Amino acid sequence: MSDTTINLTPMLYAYLQKNSLRELEVLKSLRQQTHKMSMGQMQISPEQGQFMGLLIELLGARKTLDIGVFTGYSALCVALAMPADGRVVACDINVEWTQIAHRFWEKAGVRNKIELRLAPALETLQQLLDQGEGETYDFAFIDADKANYLLYYELSLGLLRPGGLMAIDNVLFGGKVAEKQATDINTETIRALNEKLLHDERVSLSMLPIGDGLTLAKKRA
Image (cartoon, rainbow, N blue to C red; front, side):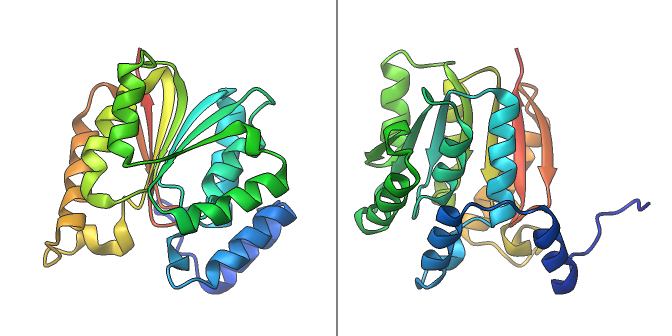
């Protein structure tokens, strides 16, 4: 037993993955290809992807948001966990990265579940609200440009149904959120969001030390 979260040494992290990870070959191939890219560190960890898939199963989610696609790993994890009629609205602006995503979504047989919107996510989310899709989404994953996190949160909350779940990535931001000397816009925005969430009575809340920090916020009725 412990009253603090255990420190994951490289040896213990390897043990965790060996004894819990059920990563499909298509996911592993996408992850390995992404790691060869100069920005490959932006991809979520495989255990985080598996955790998100479990959340989708627990929610019985059929309608989800993926804000910040990169090469498509998170959207693929979610789509694989959804039923045949599931729908992921995936938001990104990078054509090159999302072309990789397209290939692997097709390879995994879930391309029909994922609707890629190549436009600024703020525009896409507002369009969904304007089209009457407010409070109809089961799950939202936010992992895009950090400076807009507060806006992504508010728009996503408007799209989530009561009881729906939001997962927000990078909330520990490499530890910078705890460093007083870190005052760049990205760090400050994440700090502001973390504080906002702490006091936001519209949601139930848990911040988890998985990956780069993952906050779960369940929309209250």
